[in-house]
Length: 458
Image 1: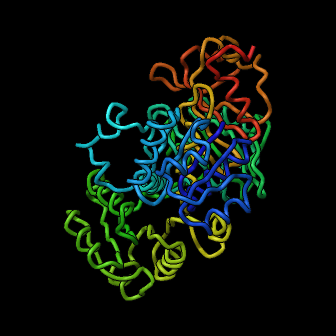
Image 2 (image 1 turned 90 degrees about the vertical axis):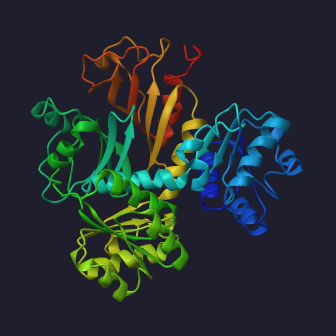
Image 3 (image 1 turned 60 degrees about the vertical axis):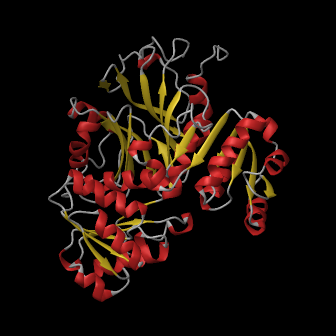
């Protein structure tokens, strides 16, 4: 696949890195020569210095042969125009634009980016996607990661196995026998820096990170089975009153009015604006690194500190300071992948990588076959995939015990007509079923083959 990426910042770099690793033909455009040089020196991609919305620059980047354009510059208007030009002059089939300004995304303007109005196939709003992720992590504090699939009926939950985890050293098959009515399947295990597909004879050890696919209503019970009984936070401090912090606070006010919220924002004008837009949230003007401000926010009584500023350093240090002053736990936004492995050593309980969220949304549209949703884990070493089964799929009509699945794939749940099914040896997949599975990066192409529209697989 030939892909043009407009924007060589953190998000553009991450997308280019992932797509080039999968042998796609990737070209990157950016007005910054230093960013273009950096990306071409480290990745197997072509770089072009110029404006991503200019026809001559797109032409140099090979837009006439491109299958997809992904516009993720810092400017919404550039992203919109780049997609429009790619459509009008070069007839690029798939056009993806990152949209950040909340004005474009208001419900009353929901038709703005429909295909009859603009030549954009997919819009991605990182702030809203990350905000939703933050809200899910607040709702399920025992989960290291949680994502929903199949009309929100199925969830993938990453759960850390502590020393007192009740299911340690028990074969996974035995867990299914002990809890036959629990719609949950362990599909992957991250141990010692290595991610592997879970098998029925495997056992979990202390320190493992288990990836579990389960029915949404069974998430809390699944967490409890793994020994995570953490209570949902009722006193929350948010550092950062930008788009993400505002979205999270507004949603909590709407859905959980009993939760006591406080926001710390360094910019006076932004703090005043957020204060006017929120009804019950206390907004403090100051820095999350100021001990006096943290004490004014009653950090010693807080259940959770969520740091959502644009600075990784402020997010990490602010969260560490909050815990040192008595806050029970923290949740940190970390953009740089180089910092992911050091956060636990400094006292960070949980973290979210916004770049990973955006890349997952893009991968959903890069994947071939009837792929409905994709979520990448462990920096792309595996993916949770929701795919629709077709009549021609080799999975359809045969009981699971007879399926010869390629290595690196484990099916976690099936969504059929509004019902979630946990796969067993007798289960048969039917056409139009949605299958939620866990796949290593090496096995993704096999997943695409299994859910292809054509019958070339045979």
